[in-house]
Image 1 (cartoon, rainbow, N blue to C red):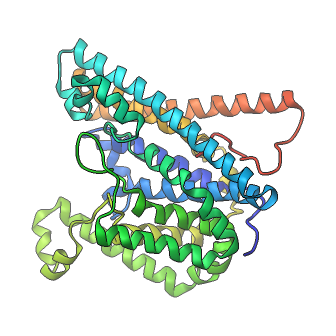
Image 2: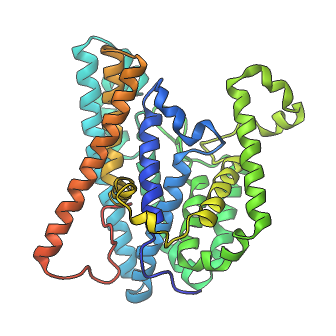
Length: 385
């Protein structure tokens, strides 16, 4: 397999930063600003973007390490990263629980606990805390990081196989996805049910991102840029948009053939429905075709805020979860008018940008103090998942 590119693709940071903003807006209930997010115009949403890019960047970093230093060292670094994300998840969980519990008690409104899925924690904190440490109990909006932890934990053997036999590696991940769909394989959640993001299904998108990073894009680049593939992607996006419109305008459902509706619904997010996967691929095809890697606009000051957020995605994501509940609280207790929805959405995104800029500044001055360049194999945006 050909070696991966040596320079980080700014498109990854840009679209991951945009995905973080969209996830934040989608996490605010009854938010008019969330109408700008892609989930309202097709089958997939920002989660697919985030998971794919996370797989791509993980392979970009740890694939190089495995090439240069071997399986053991690369595996140790991957598992260390998984541990760092786990610690971040538990820290976020603690702050998130304290935030919700304080608000629910102070304003005597138990609906907060029910809406955010933490009622079980308030009822049995000792048992629920243990389940949270086992990644089985996850409040609302906190499902992405456990998925990423699980995917990272299983990543070392996949990278090893990917570097030796990329076709076999891709076949394995497709097979796991198919088995998960056919037999309903998922991990249990607490107090009931299963993981909101089935790791046995979502690994397909993560692994495909890794496959693309380690030479896969070189193989399929010409194919996905071909006019007929681009045309097919556009047709699929238009059709999916037309279907989604019927969700908001019920009388239009009569234009959807009954047989098609029976085959299509429900479009399962938990198990990464094929229609969602195809929608993401269609978006990716248009992105590759119309947003070249060397596009000068990627380095412009207008896109810099999104790029910065993408380069510090772990911290920005955690902050977004916290801010989404704060926005929900303000809308519930102060005003739920459109002006307030726009205000909390705008301020939340601005705070995420400010935090990312601050972290970037700290990294810059620390680099200058060290007086050297990052070591080989290091992540150019080390805080990114």
